[in-house]
Length: 312
Image (tube, helix red, strand yellow):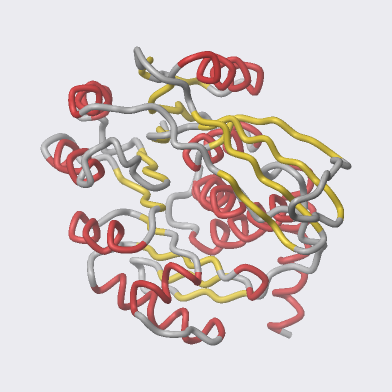
Protein backbone atom coordinates (compact mmCIF):
# COMPACT_ATOMS: atom_id res chain seq x y z
CA UNK A 1 0.00 0.00 0.00
CA UNK A 2 1.08 3.56 -0.71
CA UNK A 3 0.35 6.27 1.85
CA UNK A 4 0.70 9.98 1.10
CA UNK A 5 1.10 12.68 3.72
CA UNK A 6 -0.11 16.25 3.13
CA UNK A 7 0.37 18.36 6.23
CA UNK A 8 -1.48 21.39 4.85
CA UNK A 9 -4.10 20.35 2.25
CA UNK A 10 -6.00 22.90 0.20
CA UNK A 11 -8.88 23.55 -2.10
CA UNK A 12 -7.25 24.73 -5.32
CA UNK A 13 -9.21 27.29 -7.34
CA UNK A 14 -7.56 27.32 -10.77
CA UNK A 15 -8.70 29.99 -13.22
CA UNK A 16 -7.69 30.90 -16.76
CA UNK A 17 -8.01 34.61 -17.53
CA UNK A 18 -6.30 35.13 -20.90
CA UNK A 19 -4.42 38.42 -20.59
CA UNK A 20 -4.20 39.16 -16.87
CA UNK A 21 -4.15 42.86 -15.96
CA UNK A 22 -3.05 44.06 -12.53
CA UNK A 23 -5.27 46.49 -10.62
CA UNK A 24 -8.08 45.85 -13.11
CA UNK A 25 -11.18 43.70 -13.51
CA UNK A 26 -10.33 40.28 -14.99
CA UNK A 27 -12.93 37.75 -16.10
CA UNK A 28 -12.23 34.05 -16.21
CA UNK A 29 -12.29 31.90 -19.34
CA UNK A 30 -12.24 28.60 -17.42
CA UNK A 31 -12.46 27.60 -13.77
CA UNK A 32 -11.58 24.39 -11.91
CA UNK A 33 -11.93 23.63 -8.20
CA UNK A 34 -10.09 20.58 -6.91
CA UNK A 35 -8.53 19.18 -3.75
CA UNK A 36 -4.87 20.16 -3.56
CA UNK A 37 -1.64 19.65 -1.72
CA UNK A 38 1.29 17.64 -3.06
CA UNK A 39 0.51 14.34 -1.36
CA UNK A 40 -3.17 14.59 -2.26
CA UNK A 41 -2.19 15.19 -5.90
CA UNK A 42 -0.08 12.02 -5.81
CA UNK A 43 -2.99 9.99 -4.40
CA UNK A 44 -5.44 11.32 -6.99
CA UNK A 45 -3.16 10.47 -9.91
CA UNK A 46 -2.38 7.02 -8.48
CA UNK A 47 -6.12 6.30 -8.32
CA UNK A 48 -6.55 7.33 -11.95
CA UNK A 49 -3.76 4.90 -12.85
CA UNK A 50 -5.40 2.06 -10.92
CA UNK A 51 -2.97 2.07 -7.98
CA UNK A 52 -4.39 2.09 -4.45
CA UNK A 53 -3.25 4.63 -1.88
CA UNK A 54 -4.47 6.29 1.30
CA UNK A 55 -4.17 10.05 1.79
CA UNK A 56 -3.14 11.19 5.29
CA UNK A 57 -2.75 14.58 6.92
CA UNK A 58 -4.93 17.22 8.56
CA UNK A 59 -8.25 18.82 7.62
CA UNK A 60 -10.22 21.64 9.26
CA UNK A 61 -13.50 23.50 8.83
CA UNK A 62 -15.90 23.60 5.89
CA UNK A 63 -13.06 23.64 3.36
CA UNK A 64 -11.68 20.49 4.95
CA UNK A 65 -15.03 18.78 4.56
CA UNK A 66 -15.13 19.80 0.90
CA UNK A 67 -11.65 18.37 0.35
CA UNK A 68 -12.79 15.08 1.91
CA UNK A 69 -15.98 15.05 -0.19
CA UNK A 70 -14.11 15.61 -3.43
CA UNK A 71 -11.56 12.92 -2.61
CA UNK A 72 -14.41 10.50 -1.95
CA UNK A 73 -15.87 11.38 -5.35
CA UNK A 74 -12.46 10.64 -6.89
CA UNK A 75 -12.44 7.27 -5.15
CA UNK A 76 -9.36 8.16 -3.09
CA UNK A 77 -9.20 6.49 0.32
CA UNK A 78 -8.26 8.87 3.13
CA UNK A 79 -7.68 8.86 6.87
CA UNK A 80 -7.23 12.52 7.76
CA UNK A 81 -7.08 13.91 11.28
CA UNK A 82 -9.72 16.58 11.92
CA UNK A 83 -8.48 19.74 13.60
CA UNK A 84 -10.75 21.57 16.03
CA UNK A 85 -10.00 25.12 14.90
CA UNK A 86 -9.53 27.04 11.67
CA UNK A 87 -10.16 26.02 8.07
CA UNK A 88 -8.12 24.18 5.50
CA UNK A 89 -6.64 26.72 3.12
CA UNK A 90 -7.79 27.86 -0.30
CA UNK A 91 -5.09 28.34 -2.95
CA UNK A 92 -5.76 30.46 -6.03
CA UNK A 93 -3.88 29.70 -9.27
CA UNK A 94 -4.21 32.27 -12.05
CA UNK A 95 -3.23 31.00 -15.49
CA UNK A 96 -2.68 33.78 -18.00
CA UNK A 97 -0.97 34.33 -21.34
CA UNK A 98 1.68 36.38 -19.55
CA UNK A 99 2.46 33.72 -16.93
CA UNK A 100 1.16 31.93 -13.83
CA UNK A 101 0.35 33.57 -10.49
CA UNK A 102 -0.24 31.67 -7.24
CA UNK A 103 -1.82 32.94 -4.04
CA UNK A 104 -1.59 30.31 -1.30
CA UNK A 105 -3.52 30.46 1.97
CA UNK A 106 -1.93 29.82 5.35
CA UNK A 107 -4.15 27.03 6.62
CA UNK A 108 -5.00 26.06 10.22
CA UNK A 109 -2.61 25.75 13.16
CA UNK A 110 -1.34 22.28 14.02
CA UNK A 111 0.32 21.29 17.28
CA UNK A 112 2.99 18.78 18.23
CA UNK A 113 0.25 16.72 19.88
CA UNK A 114 -1.62 16.51 16.58
CA UNK A 115 1.58 15.61 14.74
CA UNK A 116 1.99 12.74 17.20
CA UNK A 117 -1.50 11.50 16.25
CA UNK A 118 -0.35 11.31 12.63
CA UNK A 119 2.87 9.53 13.60
CA UNK A 120 0.86 6.93 15.50
CA UNK A 121 -0.97 6.09 12.26
CA UNK A 122 2.21 5.33 10.32
CA UNK A 123 4.91 4.22 12.74
CA UNK A 124 4.24 0.49 12.18
CA UNK A 125 4.00 0.49 8.37
CA UNK A 126 5.71 -2.66 7.02
CA UNK A 127 8.61 -2.74 4.58
CA UNK A 128 6.21 -3.59 1.74
CA UNK A 129 4.47 -0.19 2.10
CA UNK A 130 5.53 3.18 0.71
CA UNK A 131 5.13 6.53 2.47
CA UNK A 132 5.21 9.72 0.38
CA UNK A 133 6.09 12.91 2.27
CA UNK A 134 5.39 15.92 0.06
CA UNK A 135 5.45 19.67 0.36
CA UNK A 136 6.67 22.23 2.84
CA UNK A 137 6.07 22.16 6.59
CA UNK A 138 3.44 24.67 7.80
CA UNK A 139 4.77 27.52 9.93
CA UNK A 140 2.64 26.40 12.88
CA UNK A 141 4.32 22.97 13.02
CA UNK A 142 7.79 22.06 14.30
CA UNK A 143 10.47 22.62 11.68
CA UNK A 144 11.68 19.05 12.21
CA UNK A 145 8.25 17.44 11.61
CA UNK A 146 9.50 15.24 8.76
CA UNK A 147 12.50 14.20 10.84
CA UNK A 148 10.15 13.16 13.66
CA UNK A 149 8.14 11.07 11.22
CA UNK A 150 11.23 9.39 9.82
CA UNK A 151 12.60 8.74 13.31
CA UNK A 152 9.36 6.93 14.16
CA UNK A 153 9.56 4.84 10.99
CA UNK A 154 13.18 3.87 11.57
CA UNK A 155 12.10 2.20 14.81
CA UNK A 156 9.63 -0.01 12.96
CA UNK A 157 9.86 -2.42 10.03
CA UNK A 158 11.28 0.16 7.63
CA UNK A 159 8.67 1.07 5.02
CA UNK A 160 10.26 2.80 2.05
CA UNK A 161 9.92 6.57 1.87
CA UNK A 162 9.54 9.06 -0.96
CA UNK A 163 10.51 12.68 -0.23
CA UNK A 164 9.37 15.59 -2.37
CA UNK A 165 10.31 18.65 -0.36
CA UNK A 166 12.79 21.37 -1.15
CA UNK A 167 15.92 23.12 0.04
CA UNK A 168 17.49 22.58 3.43
CA UNK A 169 14.66 20.25 4.52
CA UNK A 170 15.66 17.75 1.85
CA UNK A 171 19.38 17.84 2.61
CA UNK A 172 18.73 17.22 6.31
CA UNK A 173 16.65 14.14 5.54
CA UNK A 174 19.07 12.36 3.19
CA UNK A 175 20.83 10.40 5.98
CA UNK A 176 17.54 8.51 6.45
CA UNK A 177 18.22 6.92 3.03
CA UNK A 178 14.87 7.67 1.36
CA UNK A 179 13.88 5.30 -1.42
CA UNK A 180 13.24 8.21 -3.80
CA UNK A 181 13.68 11.98 -3.85
CA UNK A 182 12.40 14.22 -6.63
CA UNK A 183 13.94 17.69 -6.66
CA UNK A 184 13.20 19.98 -9.58
CA UNK A 185 15.83 22.06 -11.38
CA UNK A 186 15.35 25.12 -9.17
CA UNK A 187 15.63 23.05 -5.98
CA UNK A 188 18.75 21.31 -7.27
CA UNK A 189 20.34 24.66 -8.07
CA UNK A 190 19.44 25.95 -4.61
CA UNK A 191 20.91 22.90 -2.90
CA UNK A 192 24.28 23.23 -4.63
CA UNK A 193 24.25 27.00 -5.24
CA UNK A 194 25.02 26.54 -8.93
CA UNK A 195 23.33 27.16 -12.27
CA UNK A 196 22.54 23.90 -14.00
CA UNK A 197 22.73 23.83 -17.78
CA UNK A 198 21.26 20.73 -19.36
CA UNK A 199 20.56 17.17 -18.35
CA UNK A 200 24.20 16.07 -18.10
CA UNK A 201 24.86 18.60 -15.36
CA UNK A 202 21.64 17.60 -13.61
CA UNK A 203 22.84 13.99 -13.60
CA UNK A 204 26.11 15.07 -12.01
CA UNK A 205 24.38 16.71 -9.07
CA UNK A 206 21.79 13.94 -8.78
CA UNK A 207 24.70 11.57 -8.12
CA UNK A 208 25.90 13.86 -5.35
CA UNK A 209 22.50 13.58 -3.65
CA UNK A 210 22.74 9.83 -4.02
CA UNK A 211 26.14 9.84 -2.31
CA UNK A 212 24.55 11.83 0.54
CA UNK A 213 22.01 9.08 1.19
CA UNK A 214 19.17 9.00 -1.36
CA UNK A 215 18.72 5.59 -2.96
CA UNK A 216 17.12 6.88 -6.19
CA UNK A 217 17.13 10.48 -7.44
CA UNK A 218 14.60 11.70 -10.02
CA UNK A 219 15.11 15.29 -11.18
CA UNK A 220 12.37 17.10 -13.09
CA UNK A 221 13.69 19.76 -15.45
CA UNK A 222 10.48 21.20 -16.87
CA UNK A 223 10.68 21.65 -20.62
CA UNK A 224 14.18 20.13 -20.65
CA UNK A 225 12.89 16.74 -19.53
CA UNK A 226 14.17 14.70 -16.59
CA UNK A 227 17.05 12.56 -15.34
CA UNK A 228 17.21 9.58 -12.99
CA UNK A 229 20.02 7.82 -11.13
CA UNK A 230 19.10 4.51 -9.49
CA UNK A 231 20.44 2.47 -6.60
CA UNK A 232 21.24 -0.30 -9.12
CA UNK A 233 23.69 1.97 -10.97
CA UNK A 234 21.48 2.92 -13.91
CA UNK A 235 21.33 6.42 -15.36
CA UNK A 236 18.49 7.76 -17.50
CA UNK A 237 18.07 11.05 -19.32
CA UNK A 238 15.25 12.11 -21.63
CA UNK A 239 13.84 15.27 -23.19
CA UNK A 240 10.29 16.30 -22.40
CA UNK A 241 7.57 15.49 -24.95
CA UNK A 242 6.28 18.37 -27.03
CA UNK A 243 3.00 19.95 -26.04
CA UNK A 244 1.20 23.11 -25.02
CA UNK A 245 1.98 23.85 -21.36
CA UNK A 246 -1.23 24.97 -19.67
CA UNK A 247 -0.55 24.58 -15.95
CA UNK A 248 2.64 23.45 -14.22
CA UNK A 249 1.02 23.16 -10.76
CA UNK A 250 0.90 19.48 -9.79
CA UNK A 251 3.13 18.24 -12.62
CA UNK A 252 5.88 17.20 -10.20
CA UNK A 253 3.36 15.32 -8.06
CA UNK A 254 2.04 13.58 -11.16
CA UNK A 255 5.62 12.59 -12.01
CA UNK A 256 6.00 10.95 -8.59
CA UNK A 257 2.70 9.09 -9.04
CA UNK A 258 3.70 7.99 -12.53
CA UNK A 259 7.07 6.74 -11.29
CA UNK A 260 5.49 4.69 -8.50
CA UNK A 261 2.92 3.32 -10.93
CA UNK A 262 5.72 2.25 -13.27
CA UNK A 263 7.28 0.24 -10.44
CA UNK A 264 4.05 -1.52 -9.47
CA UNK A 265 4.30 -5.19 -10.40
CA UNK A 266 8.05 -4.99 -11.02
CA UNK A 267 10.01 -3.17 -8.32
CA UNK A 268 13.24 -3.18 -10.36
CA UNK A 269 11.92 -1.77 -13.66
CA UNK A 270 13.30 1.74 -13.24
CA UNK A 271 13.29 2.32 -16.99
CA UNK A 272 9.52 1.88 -17.18
CA UNK A 273 9.06 3.96 -14.02
CA UNK A 274 11.17 6.79 -15.46
CA UNK A 275 9.20 6.95 -18.72
CA UNK A 276 5.88 6.72 -16.86
CA UNK A 277 6.97 9.55 -14.57
CA UNK A 278 7.83 11.86 -17.47
CA UNK A 279 4.60 11.01 -19.28
CA UNK A 280 2.46 11.68 -16.20
CA UNK A 281 4.25 14.92 -15.34
CA UNK A 282 3.83 16.17 -18.90
CA UNK A 283 0.16 15.10 -19.02
CA UNK A 284 -0.44 17.28 -15.99
CA UNK A 285 1.43 20.26 -17.46
CA UNK A 286 -0.64 20.03 -20.65
CA UNK A 287 -4.00 20.25 -18.82
CA UNK A 288 -5.86 22.39 -16.28
CA UNK A 289 -5.71 19.65 -13.64
CA UNK A 290 -3.50 16.73 -12.75
CA UNK A 291 -2.67 13.87 -15.12
CA UNK A 292 -5.27 11.43 -16.38
CA UNK A 293 -4.65 7.93 -17.69
CA UNK A 294 -5.60 8.45 -21.35
CA UNK A 295 -3.34 11.44 -21.95
CA UNK A 296 -0.51 9.84 -19.97
CA UNK A 297 -0.62 6.60 -21.97
CA UNK A 298 -0.59 8.55 -25.25
CA UNK A 299 2.49 10.50 -24.14
CA UNK A 300 4.13 7.30 -22.89
CA UNK A 301 3.74 5.74 -26.32
CA UNK A 302 5.35 8.81 -27.87
CA UNK A 303 8.29 8.65 -25.45
CA UNK A 304 8.91 5.01 -26.32
CA UNK A 305 8.88 5.84 -30.03
CA UNK A 306 11.26 8.74 -29.39
CA UNK A 307 13.59 6.43 -27.49
CA UNK A 308 13.57 3.83 -30.26
CA UNK A 309 14.55 6.47 -32.83
CA UNK A 310 17.41 7.70 -30.63
CA UNK A 311 18.72 4.13 -30.28
CA UNK A 312 18.65 3.32 -34.02
